[in-house]
Amino acid sequence: MTRVRRALLYMPGDDLRKIQKAATLGVDCVCLDIEDGVALHHKQAARETIAEALRTVDFGRSERLVRVNSINLKMETEDLLATIGGRPDGYVLPKVETAEQIEWLCWRLTEAEQARGWPIGSIRVLAIVETAKGIVNLPDICDCDRRVEALIFGAEDLAGDIGATRTREGQEVFYARSAVVTHAAAFGLQAIDMVYVDFKDTEGLVRESLEGARMGYSGKQIIHPNQVDPVQSAFTPTDEAIAHAKRIVEAFEAHQAGGAGAFALDGKMVDMPVVKAAQRVLEKARAAGKV
Image (cartoon, rainbow, N blue to C red; front, side, top):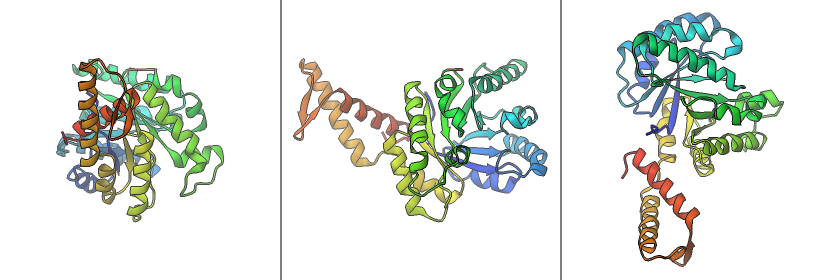
């Protein structure tokens, strides 16, 4: 079963104190960063700190991820070799533009697992799509390797790549945002939504998180501990939504047993798309431990 990823919190890989703090927050995913969150002259320190954290810090139920540098920077091999010994749960690969980039990482992970006697395929891959080329190559990226469990949408880099100006409304990235979640659904992957950069604006964060959840996203990237609870709540079905979904599924099962297809509930027609939506609500609730 794919694990719940309502919030993915980035922590700079060169700051052990911040990593230790992140491990206490109860966030679904902690991503130890060697890419954008770390200055060029601190990359080696970040590799060493992440390796230490993976060995010594108790992350509780949080998924332990490592974001390496993008392949075009030629630092990704060093990032991988320095951190794989800590056996993270997965790697986040940024600026993915081709299936070959994912395949390279998966091949290196298979080598590492074989050398250490770990189960093949046990280390997951999450791909950040944040360039125009990545968007147009989504079908190949989604279908290239079974290790890939999620697509992550990078709005800030995407806007820069296409020459758009970022706005609070986000219309300039809406096509790409929709493309990522649609392709993820088509290939049975999770989709993790864009960062809300104003970490002091909780109201705006909640609004954008709920919008992402309505679009079909599984969760959201975050950059500050204060964003954990609002985001995870936004991507968790409410008690009211769970109760309504249960009623739909139970009524559907009863009508199926009686040989009926579509039926009415509370004055509204219920057919298979409605039933499937209700089933997805219950799946999310189970993953979050609410049912």
